[in-house]
Structure formats: C-alpha cells, structure tokens
Length: 62
Length: 62
Image 1 (cartoon, rainbow over the protein chains, first blue to last red):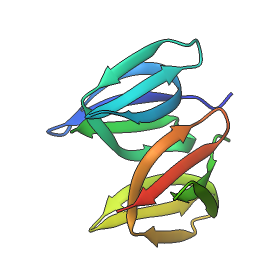
Image 2 (image 1 turned 180 degrees about the vertical axis):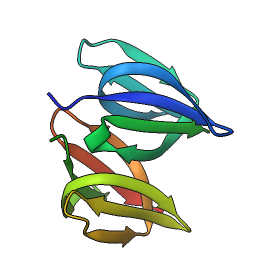
Image 3 (image 1 turned 90 degrees about the horizontal axis):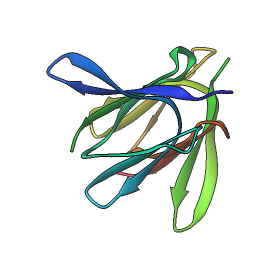
Image 4 (image 1 turned 90 degrees about the vertical axis):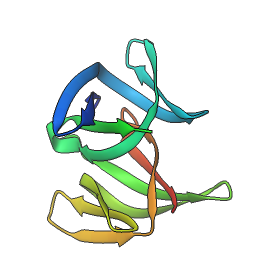
C-alpha cells in the first residue's frame, strides 16, 4: 500500500492531520482527505507539496 | 517504493507527464517534479488531486 501521512504546514511547523491518506480532492474552498479506511476530513487549504518516498503530503492554508 | 505517476489533467483528458515521481514542490509560478531517479521537470500548474493507492498525482493548469 502506498498511502501517505498528511501534514498541515504553517509558519515552519508541521502538524499531522491524517494518517494513511489515499485520496485528496478539491472540495469548495478547501480539500477533502480520504484515508484507506474511508475516514474523511475537510481542510481549508491546498496541497502544497509532496514527498512520496517519505509518505508525506503537505497541506498549506487556503 | 511509493512513488507515483504524474498526470496533467485538462478538459477531462489526462496526459502522463512523469513516472516514478518522488517530490513535488512549488517553484515560482508552477511546480517542480522530481523523480526517484533525480530527473526534474517544471510544469506551469498546481497539484489538483491525489489518488495514492493508485499511484496517481494530478496536476492542473496554473
């Protein structure tokens, strides 16, 4: 499985917001994260960057 | 390894732009893709969405 962990990145600090993320999709004024377990989370932000070999997705404020 | 393939998505069509992508980072008015082989590519666009279990990263026009 190639899921990743999603981190909210702001002012140089990174906060884990969801583990085992499968899908990330735009949703109104933010994005919706969906984990491999079907858990969903909405975040006011956008996908800032990826580091896939490290299993990391970085989300920045909208 | 958990790299993905990057697709440019526009008007409902998807074009493969890079395989084995590791990092995607903002770079001036676009993004820079870096593969696990160190190959780099600049694209005028932003990360639109992810489908990580399918190993897919979708890039939309800037």
